[in-house]
View 1: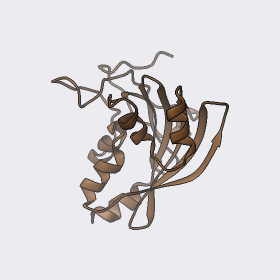
View 2: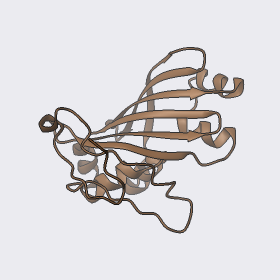
View 3: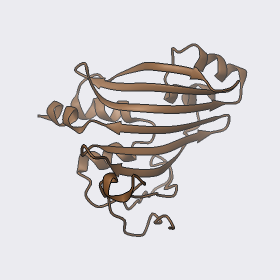
Length: 181
């Protein structure tokens, strides 16, 4: 079946009831910090907080920190090479010592400088974009689903010359909701 376009209606469904397939696949809707207008039609059934989370374009840590007025910590839980210039990274984002987002990132880089930065394990993916060329990455939201436990997951890519990141995230909304109270 064809993926809905950003202007077509779509619905968010429990992945258990649609064979584990993404409930929606959205085409690139642009970098929300560029241009004078941004528009996207997200699946029905998302709360305001969920809409903010799934449309964060490489700035989730800053957005959640601002929302909660608390520091957000990014922990690198695993990193391995999948070839000369490709890395598999697993990270978690936490507030108050409780993880609210688990992410898997496949990072591809094309320069020796970026390769050394990723290999150092000391920088976050967002910093790669800022440090390499100062160009905002192109954000493409690929899918949004609600899993069996009611949490939202998303898949997206961030791309700029010399860097590509494919990201899958799962949000624990109970942790964020408790932090908002």
